[in-house]
Length: 316
Image (tube, rainbow, N blue to C red; front, side):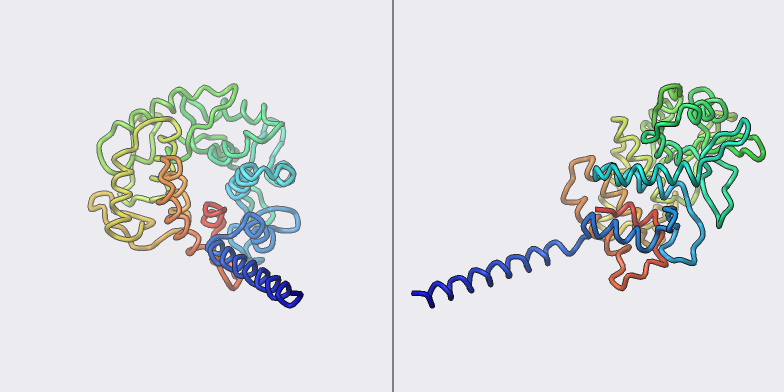
């Protein structure tokens, strides 16, 4: 009897072990939140908390964009203590306050902070900041015109860009009137053509487009339209067809021929997966997440050639 019980116990342990192995194998396709955070902290983050553009100690470029995207991911994961740590890094490293100047530098090169601020970077981090009123006032004063926000302000030249970059989106804050941005998105949602115009020139009051289309920009515009409940059907239908017929999504396309350069980008698949999730296309989202993961994950742990933008868009 005891021997039978012992055999049954061993069998139960073996079955459990096999079950765990199967779970591990089915799960190992993607990283966990913990393993992703470990990659960021090990390969991209300095001792001071800044995030490198590439995962190597030799890289001394730090983008506010990287920190902003990481803050968004941490907040989505409800890792609030880590969010606070990164906000402290932003205020300590990227925040510039000199006389009448108060802005967030868009990048740090070595030890030198840029004298330019970028709307998209500000828009990502401001929702999480407590000390933001003067920053919003500065954006409103220097970058907003006719309800539209220019993509950057150069504090060294004391001059704003004349251009709206439509992939930058239109995050709204108290004190900012961005009705003009809403109207721009409504217009491009109604425009004909597979690809969107990427820019709007404020002074000339006209849209502008690039002959070589960057798919990251197109996807971010489509995602913004989705969030504003505006149509992106023509682009979305083309995107699905491109994937089905070509088996891939290129990073860049010729606007006229619609032919891709056949070079894939991790960020493209990460953003495309987010768009698919917004459209409740979970099966397609999983396929694109899988492809994005394959492009950015390094089994050997060498992330020297992986840009953080590609990495974080494929975070779990």
